[in-house]
Amino acid sequence: MEGYLALPAVAQDLLFRQARTANTFTDEPVADEQIQAVYELIKFAPTSMNQQPLRIVLVRSGEARSRLVKHMLGANQAKTLSAPLVAILAADLNFHEELPTQFPHLPEAKDYFADADARAASARTNALIQVGYFILGIRASGLAAGPMTGFDAGAVDREFFPDGVHQSLAVVNIGKPGLDAWHPRLPRLAYVDVVTSV
Image (cartoon, rainbow, N blue to C red):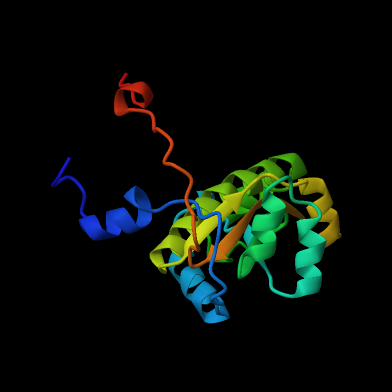
């Protein structure tokens, strides 16, 4: 499908075709400035009504890493222990408090988000969209991401978000890929298996 994408082929490969979920990492550190650069890029990606419910906790200290690892499942424990940086990605259920005052439909949004169940569902949906942006941002920085949902989310929430206002969605290991970092590429569904026209 050459010629139909504006993004140069090298960038397409970096973000999608050659990018892989890393399972091992080198010990090269990941600086706060690298993650800030990622955030400064992905913050412009769209969410419904500009909600921006994603919250990121960078797990750097050994004490915090130990608290997280015990809630990871199976092989994810070793991966999380060995990654140079780990991020907990969560949805802020009170994201509506950060909606900009100049938002053109703010009164309607405030009314809609007054319902706690609707607000929580919207927070999770839009934060999950932002999780995807975060992974692509990590790849765009030249780092590898190892996103995982294999953990006890309730326990992670109690450990890191005891106020009950945030819900963990994913844990992402971040760094330069190490030895044998990649599992074999799994097949992807074909266009005809996914796309229909009506």
